[in-house]
Length: 109
Length: 117
Image (spheres, rainbow over the protein chains, first blue to last red):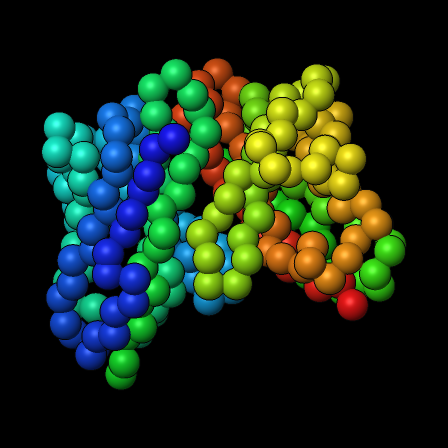
């Protein structure tokens, strides 16, 4: 089956710093989403981005489907950005989400 | 819109007992509901997919007799962990797809933390 790897696995930032999180996937996908899991476990949908670039405030994401990767950019990080970031993909012919390995982010005040 | 709730948000039970977790789509009808399990510091793993009025489809390695899923209506799915043991302790998350919008966008509930003593 498809493999979804995220990097880095852990990241510690000082408040105000920028960061880039990466999601690599081993097969073509129909859908890709980025999620933020807050410290209470709630998954918050950030972007639905099977291809192209989107921006929402301090966050932006780019998916290059032909090269099988997606990037999530966080600018001017805040302590509330702390948590785990997951990408999840859906492959052709199925509706199942396959979650990546996650990036655990901690932003220090 | 597209709010999914879970009840309870956390539960502690004794080994050998059964626990039921509810997943509800509050403001939409769900074509399909999904159940995931997440162990500490790990990713989410799909356990099963359920459609209203039909039997759930379980992922490889998930015991269907242990994790009973009932999808009684377009807004409610339940997961019952039967004869729970400490190794079943985990964070259980459900999601739902909106009726009429296809199944490749899922809306996630807040999760249920199960601790089996």
